[in-house]
Image (cartoon, rainbow, N blue to C red; front, side):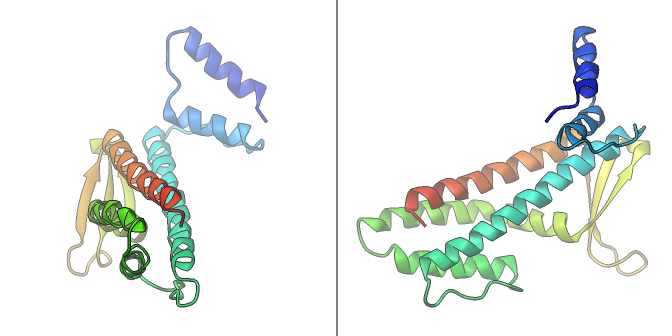
Length: 191
């Protein structure tokens, strides 16, 4: 479903040689996804950050569901209950299940690609914890988004990481790539 007015705005901007900003595209997507009407905003940095962070949250949510299903498929009789497990514990359980399932040839060919993926995913897992459990803020004066992990303000200092929108998009692309690699491995391995 599409909102003719939002398409007209994008077409007019394209014809004039201007690209619609990310904030405009957010509003266009919301409108075309069911007629949700959002007020125009003067906060393009905040809109862009919200879109990217929101996509990260959705991707990790879907990934974690797939991780649980993969665990269940690998060891249906003794699959651990993943509700309430930390992500690292689920990854450790998956690693053990993969080692057990793919120990003999010809299936053993799936263990090495999994182990390589798991090593690469370590940095994504650390970012996931920061992105999901940390606090976010937009600092307009420096045109950056900041993620703060750790205790609340006034307690011991937390870790601050500043991102431009381009850097945040780079993080999203790294996450997308790592998760797509897991999905590809899972499909090829048949689990």
